[in-house]
Length: 258
Image (tube, rainbow, N blue to C red; front, side):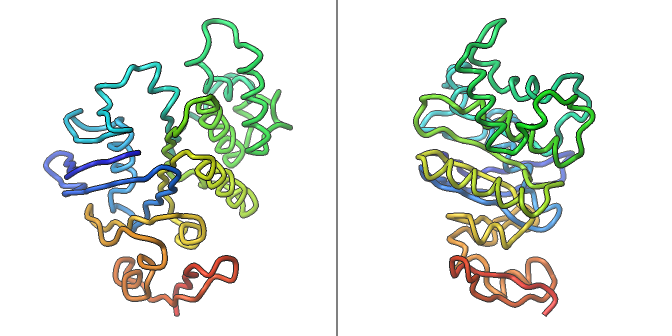
């Protein structure tokens, strides 16, 4: 579904990523984790074709991004960024409708309106539909943008790909888990997701595979049980931890400070 070879990136001669190889399968949720400054968001942007020289060897469905038709690509790939605008003079429903812009000209169709309503229900913002976006809390704005990204990929295309850069910021526990279940349902329907997270326990609970970065290099890339070990996590984060089985699915449960 997505493959990258020997990805490196530097800014003003400072190395941010070095020699990264990535392969993401169909129907897979890959979660990228690591300490601050590990290069997680930079890697996600490079994989999503939003950063770099354009010469990086990244293949999406066996084609480089340069080989894709722009409209076709917008129906097949979407990205949620952690730095969304907080000043948009529109209602919530109209912000979410922005995700449908690749599908219509000047006037949304019924199918576009239905996709927007569906995405707002999925992210629990339906009751905010007519609210001024600028009046929302940080967590509410986060969920509105998640709805916008989800509605972009509401179509008949098989094997779509979504990138999510720290989508759980500002969300309470209920909505963190609700969004993770939404993304998991998305991949179980045959699509693929690549996500940056800070919460290692949510990564362990929901990810099919985890990529652990430190200082721009891959420390481990495997299933959660093999990535989240006491020795690895304590070393990478420079903080002691204990690994226990999660009673929900027996995946690793990480307790820091012990």
